[in-house]
Length: 232
Length: 243
Image (cartoon, rainbow over all chains, first blue to last red; front, side, top):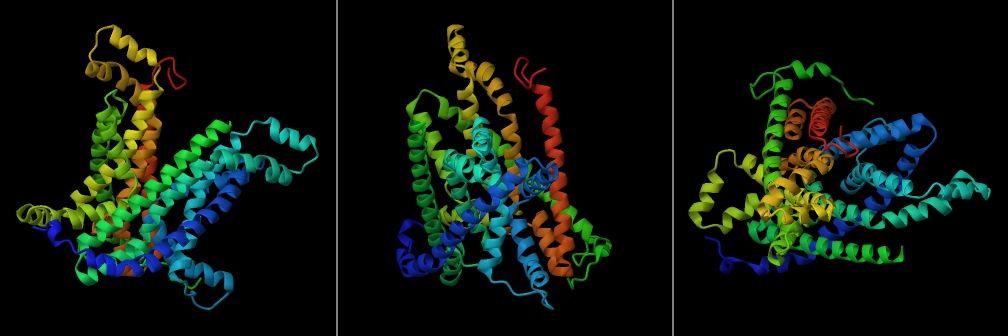
């Protein structure tokens, strides 16, 4: 029976530098860049969906529905094998190019999250009253200017809590790069766990770290939400 | 692209000796459906209990509900599956742990329970939102009629709340199906897992993943269509979706 008496805190302590400086750094960098990229492309997709060109909207809608029907694990595999070929096609190389683990997972997560962020941004844009873009165009602003200076800043602000919540989900989802044996935080913990035969300690510790970070972050989002609610 | 496409691969026999590669993928689809349905039942039952707890006037009840939801929402599903699969048997008394480890089909049951509990937190949040969206008068009227708390929930609040939250529940069921793919990490060979093994055996990466993608899309389509019928069937007269 494995009781707390057997619990080896030292194995965690010794692994701390590796877990955080390698693993957590990978996880956090991936989360931040994927959230940023997902937001940029997600906003573009949302604008496509709401554009007056029907076919643009249809393409964007198809992309969003398509990505959202697939498990993230499958999408990760897809891109892992597909990106080298896309790279070959883009660069005109004679063989599929080698893409690093980080670049491959970043592309995957941006493509995947863009679909989810676009739905949030679409709701945000639709929450802006019609008078705003109408007033903008009455003032002589072009479509791009009206989006850039009037609609998008408000949509972004209104949706900030939802966007941040989605980023917390993304933070948890990045653990799935485990299927490519990439040493993100969980991957690093798992490596140490298997090397030292200390699965219980490492997985419990990893769970605790994810739990604390997500809890603190969602607490922050909730506070932000109540502060925004007072302003309005 | 210098990739050798071979769409006939699906009709070639697989090295497992269980028929063609297509049979391999379909057997994966069956596992995905089984795990998802079982997980969904677990999620609905526990999620409903927790969702109700969160709306009860009792402080303890809503605190338990709150802790449950926070616990299952703030850890990646993958980590939760690892906890159930690798950590739990070690923490139990030796005989119980051994029994768990030797359970036939352990990845299947772990995946169903793990994904089910993970989703239960989301079902609970949806149900809570559904119950609190009901006008206060419904509960007050039930109390005035002399219904007990159990009767109020059973006959008044829950039948309304569940119908209201049917559309979000549909997307949570779709999420359950998608999340079942995470179980590949504890060795469950479901649809994504079979696509992966087909890729390893045959080297036809893109055919394998295309087939898996199409099967997931089909599964999604079936669920969405079925739920749309259910929504129409149970719609509340007088509401926008009602008859």
